[in-house]
Amino acid sequence: MKFNPANNIQDLQYFGEFGGVNPSISDSSTYTFLSAKTMFDTFEGNADGCYLYSRHSSPSNLYLGEALAAMEGTETANVAASGMGAIAPVLLQLCQSGNHIVSSRTIYGGTYAFLKNFTPRFGIETSFVDITKLETVAAAITPKTKVLYCEAVSNPLLEVADIPALAELAKKHNLQLVVDNTFSPLSIAPAKLGADIVIHSLTKFINGASDTVGGVVCGTQALIDQLRNVNDGASMLLGATMDSLRAASVLKNLRTLHIRMKQHSCNAMYLAKMFEADGLKTVYPGLPSHPSHEIFKRMMNSDYGFGGMLTIDVGSIEKANELMELMQEKNLGYLAVSLGFYKTLFSAPGTSTSSEIPPAEQVEMGLTDGLIRFSVGLDQDIQRTYQLMRECMEHLNILEPAMA
Ligand SMILES: *Cc1c(COP(=O)(O)O)cnc(C)c1O
Image 1 (cartoon, rainbow, N blue to C red):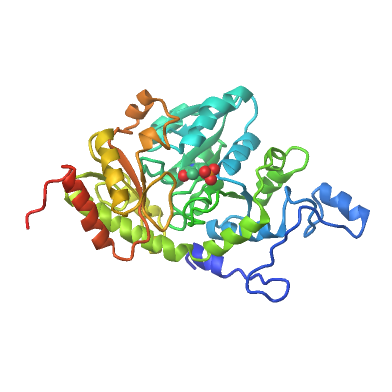
Image 2 (cartoon, rainbow, N blue to C red; image 1 turned 30 degrees about the vertical axis):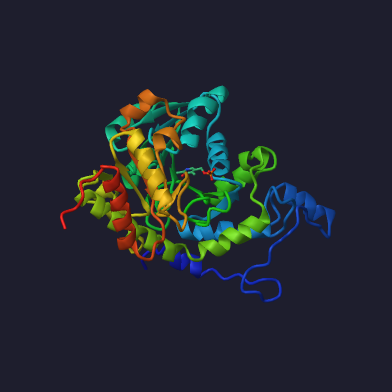
């Protein structure tokens, strides 16, 4: 049967301690053992089903982790306190001093800063490449390379990684292909396309309520065991553990992700088509004009569409700021970073989420001044939203008034 991430989430069945339809929340940092021997075995990592200490694992975190592993089709998963709390330990677990990473150059600003400024302290160097050019990616691989890193749909430029082709390259050179799938949950299932490890910031679409930060690493049991190892596991030792109460709350939001993603995608497709028809420079993977439209189509689970993210370019940062302020004043969305909220969120990546990237590099990668990134909301009446956005653009002379 066809892989269906939403079915896989829904098919999991866990009941609460008293027959609750939601699993019970384990509100404990530590756990008792009936025998000292079992405690020892658990420390050594050999006592299945036993809990030791909640930085290591907790029932609530395991429930959420298993649901996310089912969504991505991996053996298991480990949840973390934030997306960066998932990304940093994975990279530090896979690499040691003297190793090398080949990364897409259009990635989340925090990940970019981590690889550019932080991991060199540990002797881990990164080459940043245009991930859409396979020859460039291949040419950057050296005998020291351990990891090939990218985002399925990149932040903020919405470049699409050809995951099957990158997986083939990774296999050939014995690298781990790590894919951040934060922008395209359900739509793209990187592990099914050959990625070794899939990461999410749960903060965004997956939780979808802008009320918490969270992250997850989905991969093999062996990898997750390594990350959690009490002696040398980066997740265990760096300590970015999610709290049980939060894990329970994210799990409940995950249950409606498929409905939300359909609406985000449908609304984003509508706005992208209208903006493009208006003559605005619009980037959306669902538009045939997108350079990787065909690649996305080949990879996607079509039920969930092309995602909720789009960008337009209004020419200058001044215009971008004026437009965002006006749209916020008209209550069409909020001038805020982050994504995946019920309300549309917009920001100018060059001055916000990608400000870690030096200006010269921003220009080189096509991150222009007038770029506005939209996380399109769950608006019931997107035609009305579009009309009101259009009025804002006309008011600011970004668009000519439409002929009646
Ligand atoms: C937000 C984000 C992250 C970081 O996640 P946090 O939860 O903020 O730590 C990583 N990757 C992408 C693509 C993101 O959008």
